Image (cartoon, rainbow, N blue to C red):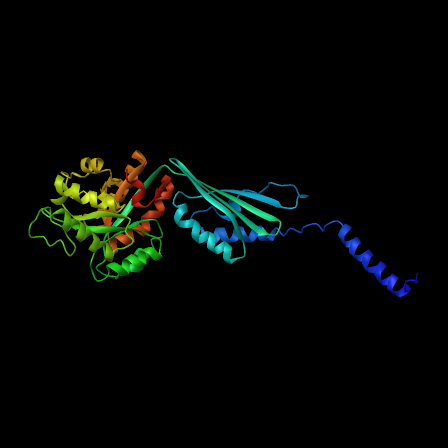
Length: 357
């Protein structure tokens, strides 16, 4: 039997030692960089600066896992302003964290009558997880519908800078109706079709896309479909004028049945105390609400401020309130000034569709 070449033997022994030695070597410990947690804190504080306490008031993080485990996890629990509406605010936060290289592991929102909690869990780095719990107390919820959107784009920045989950009621078939539908969708606002209905004054021009109480069912269905083409992202309807139409039981029954067939909710602007909406809506089985407060029935600052205070009081007293304002410069400027005050009361602004019954 031939002898093995000594040089080959040495090479085989060397590589075997390297291979088996590496296989048997214990894994290197994972190195944790807690600076990534601080980076996540900074992003969250920046994106939600209006809703969070200053950083120096944050509690210390809790370490949930021991230092010897392969994955180390930390928890941060924070109190958030009632004005942080998680369904609207969370996507922007998640986007900012993702762009900074954080991997979103999961998130969810738990909503109750007296508060909400948002849970967010990130992978900050390999082997390093960071979990957040954002808690908020809520003493009442209110919805604000901005009526008569669609005539013009003037002052649009005033409206778009109201970064709250308000509802825009867009009139159909106007020169700017579809443009406002696209703007509202892009900026995350809820959209209603502001439907023109017959007014008590027969000389009143209710505008394009309007209905009279005498309209047959086929016409109501056809007009509704045409109106929705100019406001295609509407999830609900509220009436423009309508002091005669909404008081007419048979007209309202047909109208609300058509809305229900299209899965639309209805908010009665309450242009007449004789409205038939509550009784008809219950029979038809459509989710509905009735306006509680008109903010700007008079276009004067002292009136708007007074009505806003009434809105705050009702939301606190009853836990809910629905208000309507109009697409006017003064109204928008006052709302920008007064909205932050709602946090003092623990009140939250929500889309109008959340307050239908």
